[in-house]
Amino acid sequence: MSNFPQNAVYDNQIGKVAKVSPMRELAASDPTRLCGTAFFGAVKDTNFWAQTDINAGATITQGSAQVLMATGAASAGAGTQYVSIRTARYMSGMANFFRGVVRVLDTGVAGNARRWGAFTPGGLGGVVPQNGAYFELTGTTFNAVVCKGGGPTAKASAAWDVPFTLDTNVHTYEIWYTSSKVWFFVDDILRYTHNAATATWSAQRTVNTSLQNLNTAITQDIQMEVRSACIYSFSHPGSECTYKYVTAGTNACKNGPGRLHRIVINSGAGTSLSVYDNPTGAGTVIAVLDTSAPQCIEFDCPFFTGLTVIASGTVACTVIYE
View 1 (cartoon, rainbow, N blue to C red):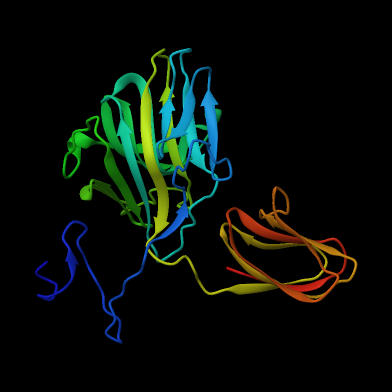
View 2 (view 1 turned 60 degrees about the vertical axis):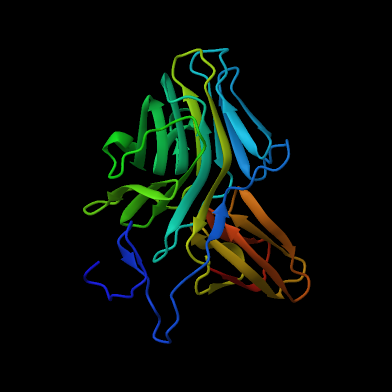
């Protein structure tokens, strides 16, 4: 800290000092939630979460402002996964963070793995972590993990910069990440920092909020309680807009996540306009618009995989997005 001014606002955990703008304003921003939701009531919301159960007996039940993830004991290799439908867009020059309030009901069982964090699963059975960062209790070992292209790099909690011993109490877990570093916090204490000094730590940083409770071959009911799990941006997720003038046919606007602000229809009587959350013009439909009259249609909604606009005939419109 000796290199910083004496009265600087300084975080001695991450080694960063706050900055002031040329107009003497503190450079600060309010976190914005990108994906994940509170667990309200007893009915799981399939608009925001996708559940994957492996073998018989695995369940996710919601109630008392949390979800209980249980493998059940009915069959070997049972497990369950809960993944946010939305992805958390990562934007250059900004930092994202995962925050979860989680309780495990034991301190580890051989043949079981529980994971929570900011990562995208896939691969065999759709549950193998592919990219991102997460906490993992595998057997009796508690890890901080970064994963790139399906290849995890784990650091056991006993070897963290500030070691942590897992217990059966609830704890608050946070993972802050940028393109060069990943910080792992437990109960507001920085425990471990992963430095991506020579290679990227993940093949992509636009990821999901993901929760897993998976057995390999044991017939034992292993449980995990999750009170909240979300990914946030450390700033408002806005950026300078761009636009595309759309006429006829398929118009690919963007490959990757962004935000659709508005569509201005200039002309196009008798035709329609289909808007897709997809880079190739298929899959999830955002809207199908009637272009019979000039109008400005406001959306201000995120898209998560890409943006494509398809005109059924000749139309003239302007798509404004980022």
